Length: 93
Image 1 (cartoon, rainbow, N blue to C red):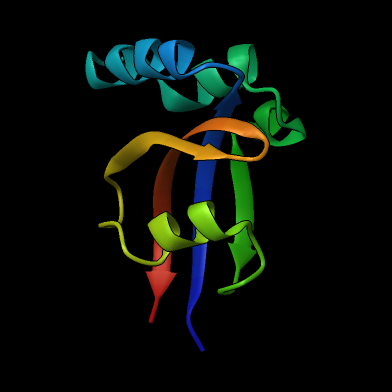
Image 2 (image 1 turned 135 degrees about the horizontal axis):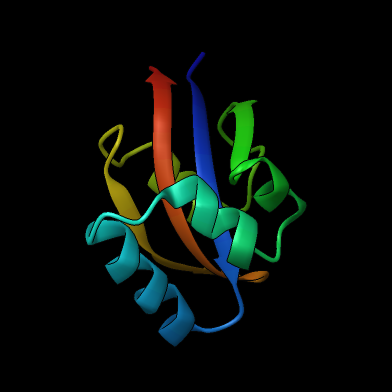
């Protein structure tokens, strides 16, 4: 069965998500920005969500995690919780 590990930053607006994405692409540290800005409790651990399987996260999040290249920054991804920047850190298909 497929498994993945990912980290994310959850914010309230697409604009804030875009701003953080630009900062990361410019060299800012993902984990530092997650600690400073993420509205998810995982922000305290740099946005790390640990390992999970398909169907354990909301649909929009799941689709990205199980299709995006490992290590590539994805987002903004809109879910019922807000806007996410997502980085798949590991995946076994």
